Image (cartoon, rainbow, N blue to C red; front, side, top):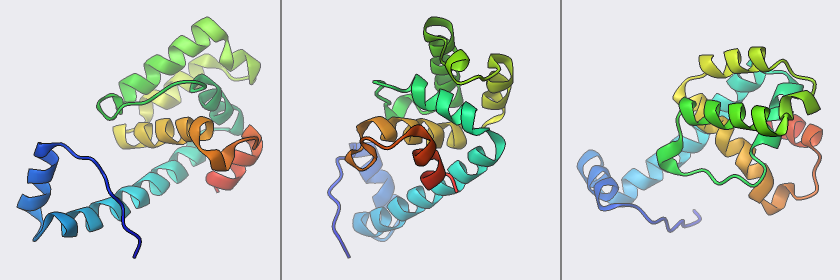
Length: 142
């Protein structure tokens, strides 16, 4: 099995030690579980949002960096709100701002986090470099 070396806080290390037999056993459980939750959440989000709305979210995260402590629905909502106000990303993709915001408000924090990771990944991952929004959505949301 491939190895992953992650940097974690002392508190996270202690949590892994407290809840699992070893820190490694905890990490081996948590990482695949987190990936599975990401894909499950993205499938649910993709069923609720249109392609145009997903394009709007992608466009809003151009050049944005997400931080773990900002992975909540409120941060997603604020980012989309700002991108709509200052860059008119919703207009560029033919999306109703009110409908998009209503859908974003209904997302759980886990779904919001998955959507933020998904949108940011498009811009930073070498795998998706040069891939159109449509193709990215098709390949990652089906």
